[in-house]
Structure formats: structure tokens, C-alpha cells
Amino acid sequence: MDKISNLIINIKNAGNVEKEHASVPFSNFRMEIANLLKKEGYLKDVVKKGKKPKFTIEMEIAFKEDGTPRVEDVKRVSKPSKRIYFGAKDIRPVKGGRGILVLSTPKGILTDRQARKENVGGEVLFKIW
Image (cartoon, rainbow, N blue to C red; front, side):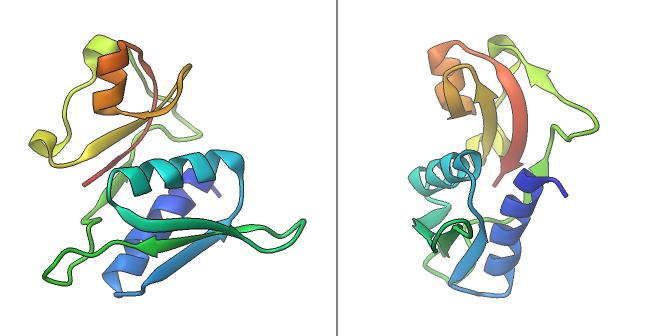
């Protein structure tokens, strides 16, 4: 299964059933994405737990003041079967600026705003709003 899809769907589903935490198997790439989502406010906390070789990423889901999850929906853009790449000039805001586009660039995992600021493009991983 696609590891990035697994991560974002776990976050979305945990929020929809009002669970406080979600966990996925650890990888450095997933940890980078989770830390970016924490920085953007979609997750409250991200922690690496466990012992070798079974590390996991424990994520605390962020909720709005009215009790609804911060993650309303996610859409995987680039898939293992079809990779999608955007140049810096092709990157557009998601949902009128209410969401973010997450890209894998030569400068690391960046949001659409960061990628435009750095003037760098890359593989479009997913949209989240």
C-alpha cells in the first residue's frame, strides 16, 4: 500500500471518529510530513515511539473550537502509478488559501506557500484542507 496515503487517511479517519491519536509505522519521510502538518496546525503533537525495529509515529489530532477536526478532507495527487510534478510557477493555492499543497522538493518537504517563496517545484504529494 502507498505509505503517504496511509498516513493522511489515518489522520483524516481518526479526526472523523473523534479519536485523539493516530499512529503509523515510522519512516523518516513520514516523520517529516507529520512534522510539517504539525507546524501547519493540522496535528497537535508528533512523537516517535517504540523500540527497534518497530518504531511508530504517534500523532495527536488537532480539533477546532467547535469540536470538528482541523482536517476536513485530503486528496492524494501524485500516486505510485502516476507521478505529478509542478514547477514553481504552476503551484496554486488550495481551496482559496484555506488548505495546503504538500510537495517533495530538492529542498525537502514543503507547503505550496513555502515552495513559491523558495521558487522551487517538485512532486505534488497531496492536498489537505
